Amino acid sequence: MTHASRQKRKSVPRNALILTTYEELENFVRAFAGGHLNLVIRVGARGLAKSRIVQKTLSKDICWIEGNASPFRIYVELYKHRDQFIVIDDVDSLHADKNGVRLLKNLCQTEPEKRVTWYTAAKGLEREGIPREFTTSSRVVIISNDWKSTNHNTAAVEDRSQVLLFQPTALEVHLRAKKWFDDPEIFDWIGERLAQIPSPSMRLYYRARELKNAGLDWKRVIPDSVGNKRTRLALELLRDETYATQEARAQQFILQGGGCRATYFNYVRRLRSVSS
Image (cartoon, rainbow, N blue to C red; front, side):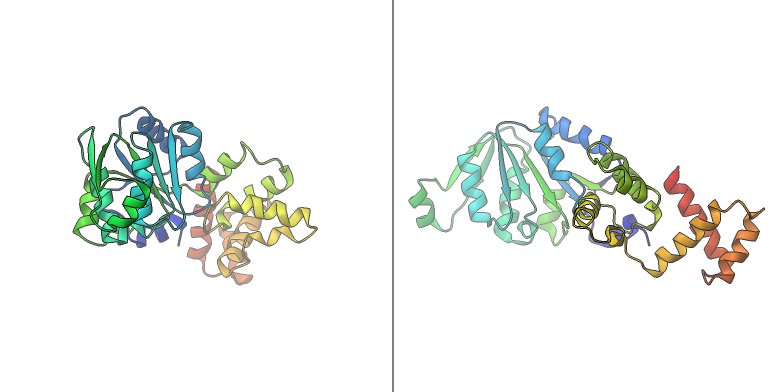
């Protein structure tokens, strides 16, 4: 099963736009920075540089909220940074909290000036000198690894948002890594094994370099699973020019325990799609 198909099996917002390239993702971030989009929810696996792209594009007048921030703390930050860009990063529990969802519904209003309210924890607000309601023109990006469509309230947020599901291929991530990764040995080795990578991630390159610098076996960053062994066998047979035909390679694939003829040709199609 590919990374993309596994992602689709998880809870995916019904109106999500599926993006597969960094260029597409950057175009949406630029549109947000230009004032054309009000609320953007970006969903995607970890290690794909989602946050870095936003940081690079929204270089000023930005409030970045991340980690275990509670809805109350987010309300406080929204007030303190009224009319600025707001990025809520990796706060995956926000959409599952009723107060968090209420805040999101406030922020996804279509009017330029949005009314944001908080009617509980009054003493906490008084201590910080913050009113129970205020208006703001802030536009918001939510970066989530696993956005869940839990009820009609989150559905209302999704319907008023641009929901982007980022699903780059291993090749797309590899080409992006080429812009910054400076170890050609590791880069080329990973490039030859893209079909063996179940979950594309920039962190794969960092981990390999860290292990190499420590004098450890950095090639173990790609798991040696049954699927990877079959991929490696199919790749070796494809590159072996001593075989006159693909049928001959398929027979050797069977003899070496890779599986049946159909399995070999499935791996060949996958390898060619990655390299194209």
